[in-house]
Length: 168
Image (cartoon, rainbow, N blue to C red; front, side, top):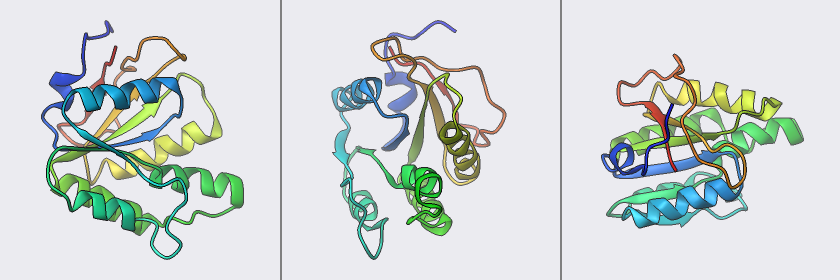
């Protein structure tokens, strides 16, 4: 698949984007591009709220305008069980977030790399479930410094609007 020159056509139709998945320079480039497209970019605090991990995200979603949230709730749902044996974010909280994003004309951006790891497999499982509630765009952010491009189509994306995205 040939990389497209900009993500604008695929992302401009959304009012809300939640960025989750692979961390790194490519993620930072994508988030910077979202700001260039007119999204107010906000990063969730690295430490989760002790009583309600989803509270900061819900507060952001309650605001006006186009919003891109560099998130960590789904990361906790994935990495919590791998690192500590349990997640501080429940499935109910994750599904509530997905519903809130969908109600705000939004989508989840699932950032991936070609590397196959236990975390990558867990992210794929989580996003298969979330795709039943909100559009999920899978973005291959590839190698550090390399192009950001879409992987081959995956059948687990259940929303008609969901799809693969090329950035770069």
